[in-house]
Image (cartoon, rainbow, N blue to C red; front, top):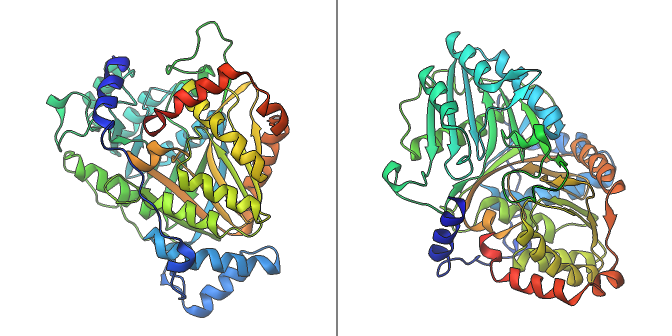
Length: 457
């Protein structure tokens, strides 16, 4: 089934895939005060200035942070929101218990939107049983799942949920007869997010997939004789007023996909400040001429002053992404890439390898994970700009996918992600340029072949 669909996808895509150039943001950014929204509304200039000083650990960080904020304001199109608390979640072992706990606490509604939606379990309890139990309590449960991403999910799982009066929307059905909002086979909902009562959310790279329990390489093509391996991934748990931005994205998708009427009372409550974090949610979609997260990432990369640390599950960079990383390294920025040593997509890995030499020659440091499958999508820049989300560092996320990313400004969150990154690279293998250039000719040929398909991986 997947092989046949892939052939259809490639035939559709061959004539239409291209990434538009992005105007350099250091020239386009207005020199104005950045919008920051608090729990009670927009902050004054004085309040914003005081906030920037407070979330910068070092005196010099405040200036770097302000420059990032002004640049980003020109491209992101959603305001920064203060007064949030966040918690980094590593892998399924931390994310699933946090999700199940949030769902149990729900009083009004539970909204889930996932690329892969399966009946995962935590602490011996299945997601289906928990959701049906909450629905019996009168809590509204609404689900959006991607038709292609979840094509291996057991049909009776969705049947049981629907029988329990849970609303379910299939995003861009693979079967054209099931399409309700126009047929768009190649545009996929790659988002992974949970919103509870409009006040708490979990967002990032972790699917509701049993691969995080079995630790296998998954259904996407791993050799059956290989030992099971751990999936390394990252999510954020967010509480506070910025959750409304995630809720808006969910409602927007629900409406676009012509889902049944939502009992939306209480979807956007007045949420008091829960912490000190400044957060912006960026929802990207092929409907935008250039996806917002892509522009925000390029802007931060081009204006980085000290460091760029990225973890990328699928490293298939656009021309501009590669050029900007190389330019940053050449001007003295500490550029580090954490990339998979093994993957569920051998073609994506081959494309990534084809870019290594140019990056290494410019001074970019590359680390490959060992004995695990890296699925994390994170970035921390200049020790003040942090992002965790669903967007891969690849062309598909730019061209075809609906994505969601949480961008956090400030030193505290950046330091936490940096510690996680440093822990990951301690068990990874650094790639040496001389050794890399000596790799077998057959591997180089495979890399060149893989590049032919890089826009569609």
